[in-house]
Image (cartoon, rainbow, N blue to C red; front, top):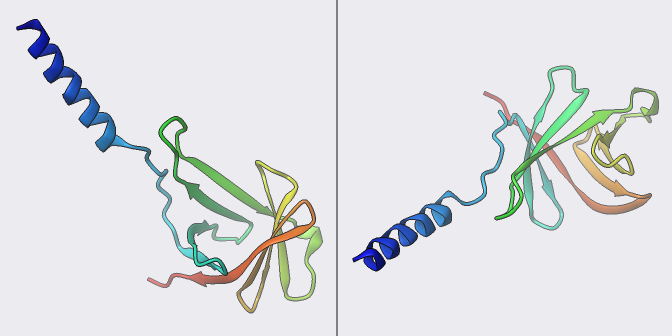
Length: 120
């Protein structure tokens, strides 16, 4: 009898863990970047445009996280603004008025895409 109860409780816990899975932190997204590799990432653009907040899903062992890019006010170049990742200073993002986005890591371009702002 104890074996049956233990089996039922174990199965219920296992099902609960599988259904619970990793959660993505929630942000009130008001924009997105569609990358050249086909992936789209939603983000929250601050009212002033000084920060871009991205939510990353977690894995089974790691909780989801938030990545914040902050504008480098002294690095404006023509119609483009430059941002750095607060969690990885060597990761930069350039966003131009045309909507073109370039992701740079340690001086190397790793992805390009286009920015879309949501309108409500």
